[in-house]
Length: 449
View 1 (cartoon, rainbow, N blue to C red):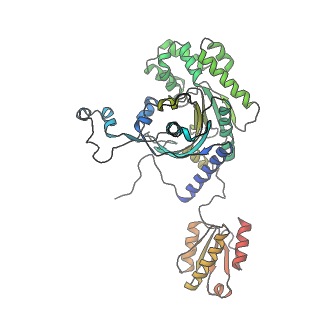
View 2: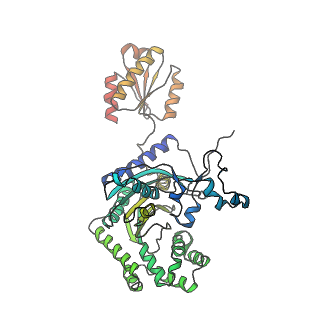
View 3: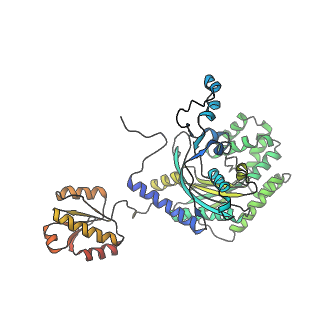
């Protein structure tokens, strides 16, 4: 059998996996700095938890897990006979792979509410799955790095989330633009344009603006049944951009005015601090997920054609669907896969990141191997990563292995070294060699760490 991977997934070799651990570590350290605590949730959720939260397009991208055993035993026979897969699916697949981390988090909050302090701030770094068409920057299995806070309507948290985006990308050396909008402003546009029943269709179309442009968005809204005069008015409003002009245009809409006030409050908070990355209000930012109700965020790299590197928003009603109304929340996500790909292409990872141990011990006899083992143990006690070639063999073979690993140093133990209870330390970069005791070796490696 020829080995293969499911489409939209990938393996990571040690160097790449080390870089990813570095990426996750930087993100998590900033999360913790702002008072967020880690949690984990299962890879699988009940379909009743997942469906109806992501919009029509999102629901189509859910990975379903077939029921255990004879999954056809409980199948909807009528749907099966009609070959109606949409009607059949609920009877043969009652679980699914999580689509994001936010909806499972809302479920988690409701189920664990008696054990949590409110407001509750959590972060989560775990994989999610979407049955999307794989393409550049888009995978079917990928990691999300989320921070959310539930139990408060304070716009202070929206401000913190902008700061977190700014601090993480600054630490990674990746310049970005952080964009902010408000779902209630979009609701106001639909109201003023007299198409409130088309709100979801309008936001879904606007959400594609960066990909398909104005003409594509217009065509998308036409396809979704939005009247032509409404489309013209929407496009005109989206071209205005500034909060002052929007306040004039949307003054009849209470939701829009409330949304504009929220944006102004966030801007007032941010005016008291400084950001390293560009930050802007963007009326064309829509975020297609249905559960957003307030401020919405999106981040894109300044010098990379990769689309969104993260996004999020406020979801005041999400826990209500699980039986816990009145628990507002807001959160953002980092798209780890795209961030990793951009950093790889721009060579932004620190050159010091290595998956290889710092030193490899090689022995030329069985007696020397025992001494090498004792020496490696002493080195490891000092927190220095070390490995041992597992058997005596020709120097060339062991050195070839050292080169394949990419170690910085090799400690050679032959008959002469065994006699003097020393090792020959070779610098693999310069080729320099020096004979030293184990104590001297430890001191030398500590100085180079």
